[in-house]
Length: 99
Image (tube, rainbow, N blue to C red; front, side):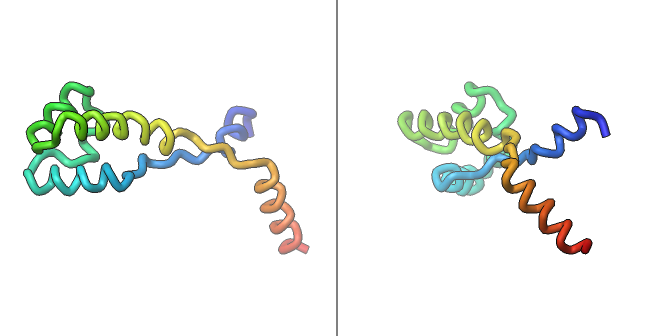
């Protein structure tokens, strides 16, 4: 196994999570028959703001939702390193089962 492949085994990518605020925005978008929240992730900020305005969100609400749309994917979909201690515990468990 190459060093790069071994290094990649330590990372688990996660999909963006929907915070309670984004869940509420998702429901509102759906009720207005607008694009789904999952479609908005890849759009530009101007397009996201326009859709939120069509969905009748006030300016302050739009700003907060846009902030969440920018922040959450960065926090929740970034690779997450598995700690060395967790790997050691897992390896120890596998060794005891083999014996």
